[in-house]
Image 1 (cartoon, rainbow, N blue to C red):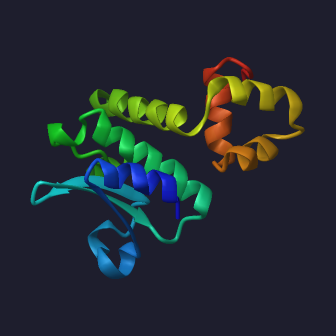
Image 2: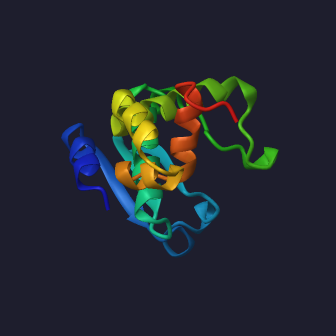
Length: 147
């Protein structure tokens, strides 16, 4: 999995569990990841069905929820009664967790340089060990692309 991110989590007393949701947590089988607090212990669950890059991005995102205090507020981050869409009032929490993940995983100056030198989005994503969509999102965020 992602040893340095797990070390960061463990240092701050956050447990990371890579699990088969369908077998171990069937109520969550449609999730990729989620964060919660059980018995005063912060826990991040990530699906073992995801590839390394996706697990890495989701772990950084979930760490964002913890470090930004979102789990302390008791929010449900996926509303299954609303077709999995976030209530608009929670959008800011997801955006902030995404931004946290970006800065944890990628230096913006290095991304800019990679964008200028690499031949494809996939090449950049492989360089940083993240998904293509993650790179696309932050190239837009940094205004390096506009599509």
